[in-house]
Image (cartoon, rainbow, N blue to C red; front, top):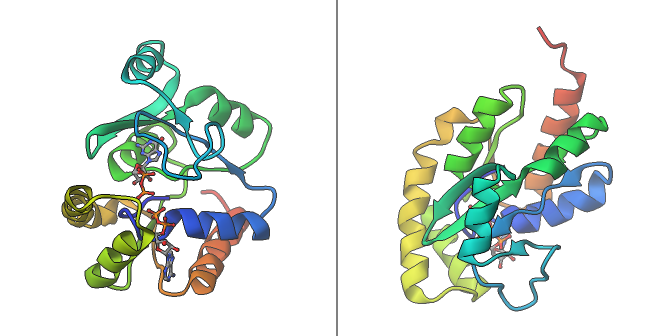
Length: 182
Ligand SMILES: Nc1nc2c(ncn2[C@@H]2O[C@H](COP(=O)(O)OP(=O)(O)O)[C@@H](O)[C@H]2O)c(=O)[nH]1
Ligand SMILES: Nc1ncnc2c1ncn2[C@@H]1O[C@H](COP(=O)(O)OP(=O)(O)O)[C@@H](O)[C@H]1O
């Protein structure tokens, strides 16, 4: 799942956890500093730049990207082991990374979460109160670039109300399970 900063990816994923308990969540590595309340190993694996570069060089990341001045990447082992054990896994990642995953797992299901409007998106980022003004401006610029790449995804879901967005994503996951693969 991808979507611009502040659209509600984290909020929707938390709500989905309650509804689809068998769905496994990938915890990413990042060089971004933890926000208040974020826990290492739960929200992210927080890494120094050197530690992250080591992971890249040792092929420990399934994909990675630089986003607004920090690196983000998906630890490879956990994803591969989860899939080998027959479970589904959800990656909450930005667009460049999702396109790398699409190359490696074309059978994956790619969902783009959209805000009802750019004004509402900005209100949500500001309302969350975790970023300074310069970072908010940078993230809003990137948001437009990301939305322009939405055509690479299988589904677009508008996060107007959290419950409605969750139901739409749940329906997608259930439908994908029932799909006859050609
Ligand atoms: N490529 C990639 N992007 C990631 C990964 N983990 C998180 N991201 C994305 O990085 C962007 C910034 O994440 P974050 O700093 O937590 O900000 P937020 O989206 O505003 O909560 C978001 O688009 C995340 O989905 C990852 O492992 N790989
Ligand atoms: N459907 C929604 N309606 C109103 N506010 C929302 C909705 N979804 C999320 N939010 C709020 O928007 C802010 C950003 O949500 P968050 O989940 O942190 O976004 P993301 O993970 O995409 O950056 C949070 O303060 C969250 O409570």
